[in-house]
Image (tube, rainbow, N blue to C red):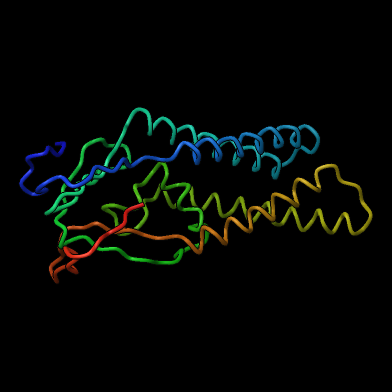
Length: 221
């Protein structure tokens, strides 16, 4: 059930924070992969093959992820309610309902990507997760989307190297500039997301107890 102002576990309401994907992220990501999808269609006509199909499916797949992120923001608005005794957080990535967690059970953990492709976890979590509010590990759907992002980055990077070799050998290639630019952007994105990847954990007290954090300020993204 949704938390109300008189929830005894929550206490006095201090702040209500909207929890939703930012429109700038949704529109920018969807628009970028939409352009990649158009380029992939043109490439498929000129160079049909498995790689062209992979780029086509990957680009339009992320367009679908962006659309789902926009729909989630519009149809399933979520919020984080901060009270004096607890924090009410969404029960799931698509649920408008919340569950209350005592402040002394709130923990935050930092961790690097624990597997190939998880540097792209923020993109997947935009739709399939809520920065792991009640999960210790990313869900299978999150891992799948993140893995596809990592593989896509690797494929584009390999294509960029091939294009550079062909250019160095004097072979003209119409899409060499685009592929090289894409490989550089993908590499930088992997570094940025890999360096900034954080995993939040808001869980109930375990058998060994939880780290107290009732004092001080917890900043939620």
